Image (cartoon, one colour):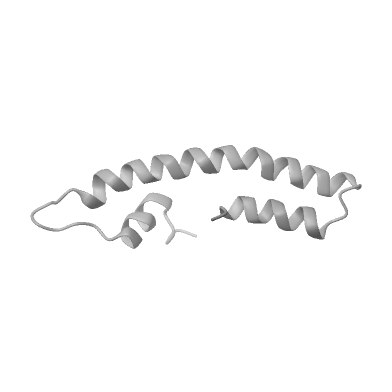
Length: 76
């Protein structure tokens, strides 16, 4: 399975003329974001393990709710 940034990088390389400066800059930015994506997803997985699989009064948090709270998806 590819991450969203890996898919984006693949799309950019297949779609844009890579002999121009702007597509090269886009490619470099995506490549730099791949490491950040990895760090964020690993941190998310660790926190998810703690928060969503630990019972609180017999209840667990849904993966969707944890994602919303972690990434503030409702603020956009």
